[in-house]
Image 1 (cartoon, rainbow, N blue to C red):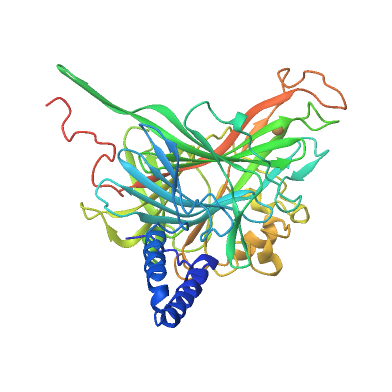
Image 2 (cartoon, helix red, strand yellow):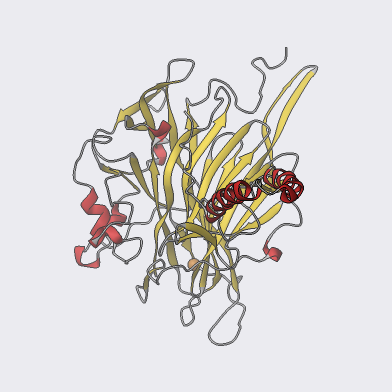
Length: 468
Ligand SMILES: [Cu+2]
């Protein structure tokens, strides 16, 4: 299935060209009756034909990273820059797979992804997988409760400028987010997103006598910095050549002045609105691997998740959430979808069970809801959580009202709480001034989204037989 075309509204350029054309026709009719003007008109006409055959300056794509293992293109990147026709979209071209996605800075929640599409293996067009993904909050309770912070409650537009020096020496680029203003898109004055192509290592290999084959792969990493005063959080989306996406939030900066050595937990709280293949027939399952009573034989199952509900991760069952279409199958007749797996995770945060503390939303790892109108945080009242801070207890728990999954709304939303405990050590304790200590090394938390029965074969060119 193709991604929807982006409608291109009339621009000042096309309007002014139309006015010019009408003026030329009228003037030609008036002047042609004068013999002395005919030679001049013929010359002007030739010049006009030359000018009008120069490609339009609008909607010009620009290659921003050009490596052997990956290329990145910014769409509609005309450097005149004032009358951009679309919001920011990037395309990634790996040798064996192709991505397209948009990047947004909406309200209080930092960098988000929109309209993500993937093409690989048997597909000849991009398959739409994500409507909107990003952070809903970052909850940071200190162990002794001297402080309890929601680090995305501090107001709109808290993303920092990214500098050229933040990039690697090769295969990196800065991009500018855009804002819809008076009918066209205008770039930010400073870049707030970094894009990098990174060599990862091996995607697969096979060694049989006389037959050694392998494939080395690249990632494209898109990241921004969310400024929460002493903490700088790196919000990072990694697009893998195998069709997966990694979502990560990394805490760095310096520890809380006055509480430099106090342990705490960073809990990035994610929201991913999927709409696989742009269809409304998506459904959810929980994968579990259960050992028998002797721990000798195991049974794997995919358990239907029929209604909006919480789902806890069980490491003893290798549990994961799967979202797939109820009708769209690959070449084997298997329903195609994506699986959500823990990423960097040092533990599982569980916090206050006292309702008055409004931390009941931390009692589970994951939630599934329908994407009903306004529930993306852009609605009114509690549904305005992207622009007006509310505790997730106020909005998330109200969305969990037992509706059949996929029964209403425009896709299925996974809410994912990732946790990383931060016990400051002497590496953090270098004494500075003003109550500050040294800069803390990045600690990451997040999850991964992997294709599940999406492809008919190894999307990275692996042979059907190893050793033949
Ligand atoms: Cu910390």
